[in-house]
Image (spheres, rainbow, N blue to C red):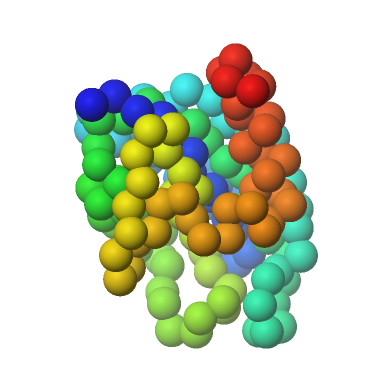
Amino acid sequence: MHDIAYVALGSNLGDRAAYLAAARAALASLPRSRVLAASAVEETAPLGPVAQGAYLNQMVAIETELSPRELLGELQRIEQERGRTREVRWGPRTLDLDIVCFEHQSASDNDLTVPHPAAGAREFWTRELAELRGMLGRD
């Protein structure tokens, strides 16, 4: 089944712009998928209780045949290849990739919820999602 997934990209360690660029390139090479559009990059304050630097954030729309579970596995692989560690919840990271939503699919289990539980609570995700949907004529 072809669907459109919206994936949030974030980085607040090292060369943040380079990490986002590497993530976009990796997403473009996913099997049975293609990147349709990318939002503008914006800098945001970090979320959560851990003191850390500002994030660069962006969202991409991907047409994919991957299921939410398959896409999650690919996103975690991309994060790990870019040096992502999961030592501190809400901590700084080289790369953070989140499935915000799919156009026609959802998922709910112990480690995957689609749409993302914070999808409506993060103003920058709301802006980026609206920007992408406008680009795709889905507003």
